[in-house]
Length: 143
Ligand SMILES: NC(=O)c1ccc[n+]([C@@H]2O[C@H](COP(=O)([O-])OP(=O)(O)OC[C@H]3O[C@@H](n4cnc5c(N)ncnc54)[C@H](O)[C@@H]3O)[C@@H](O)[C@H]2O)c1
Image 1 (cartoon, rainbow, N blue to C red):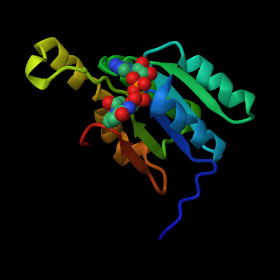
Image 2: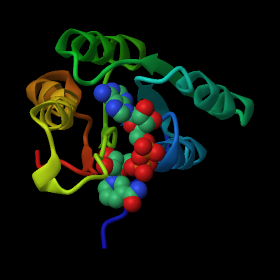
Image 3: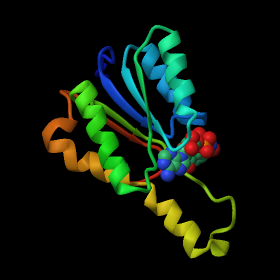
C-alpha cells in the first residue's frame, strides 16, 4: 500500500471545534500537518491553542459553512496563509435526531446548506487547491 507523508502538508478540517473534527485536527497536527481548524463555534480558538501549546501549527477560523461568502473568505485566508491545501476534511455537520418524515423544510435546508465548503474546494482544485497528493475526506456528503 502507498504511504502518504503527512509532515508539512496543509489541511482544512471543518467542524473542528469538538467531537470527531477536533480529534482529526489534533491527530493531523501531531503528524506534522499545518491545520486550519474551521467551525461556526468560538471553540475553534481553544482547539488551535491546544495545537500551538503542543508545539504544532494550527490556525483557527470561525466560519458558517452555510454562508457562501464566509466560506469563500475562509478558503482565501487559508490559501494566503499557507499557499495551498493538501487535505480537506469535510466534517462539519448537523444531524437532526428525528425521523426523516418529521423533518421540516427548515431542517432540510440547514442540513443541505452546510456543504458549501465542499463546492468551493472543488472549484479551487484545478488551481491552487491541490498539492502533489491531495486528500478529500467527507464524513457525510457525497462530493
Ligand atoms: N457521531 C456519529 O455517530 C456520526 C455518525 C455518522 C456521521 N457523523 C457525521 O460526522 C460529523 C461529525 O460528527 P460529530 O459527532 O463529531 O458532531 P458534533 O456535533 O460533535 O460536531 C459537529 C461540529 O460541526 C460544527 N458545525 C455545525 N454546523 C456548522 C456550520 N454551518 N458551519 C461550521 N461548522 C458547523 C459544530 O459547531 C460542531 O463543532 C458530522 O458531519 C456528523 O453528521 C457522525
